[in-house]
Image (tube, rainbow, N blue to C red; front, side, top):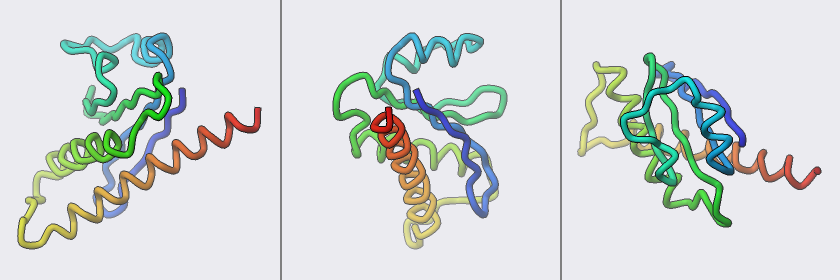
Length: 123
């Protein structure tokens, strides 16, 4: 498992990305959480607890998380961030703020995955 906390530029919202390799790691990380629907039952999920945002991605299967899953969950996270800064409203005619934040999130996740791969290759 690998996890990292990030703070968005401009908006200042913090979130944590957790990439887990198996259910045991997930259970250990979130042992104090009481989920109505358990995020570990999905390959990816975005949720909040005590005003903290989390994104979880499963790496249990080879090739996961896929680029599509990362994009999918990043969009959910982007929307949660915008909900948290309620003064912001998405604009279909000017989606540059959406595109900027979405690409920033996706880049951070890929950097985290690359660091995980690099650490694994060093062992």
